[in-house]
Length: 187
Image (tube, rainbow, N blue to C red):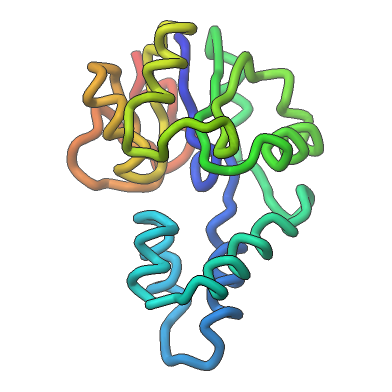
């Protein structure tokens, strides 16, 4: 099975750190961390618009996110189990390539990935299908795993099976709350 993975919120539990960054930019506004987290899980652009962040605030969020150290971002438990059983793993992320490679290397996961399309590779952002088409043509993707609807929309358009991780929004072929259960849902 060849799997296309989203990175943030799917392979690595990054959204708590991103929530903290947005909290710092918003300051003392009476907005809960849960609301920030939920808006970020839709998309960064959605959160920036929802909280009416100006251009300088958006730049600050992006700059602070790039400053996160690999040891501050942990892979989800049992994700390595799924990586091991896949024939091929590829990544499609909006995160910069160097940041992804640094995090994967720090956690000794870089050897599991055959290919990647990163945010600085020039492809349109999700939910555009271009990066998914590129990876699918090259690697014959069987399954796309993501934590947000925008992660699975391109796959649905291309007829690729989808799995939402820690998200029960209707539309995916499979749902996983933890990677330990991967074998139970994917037969």
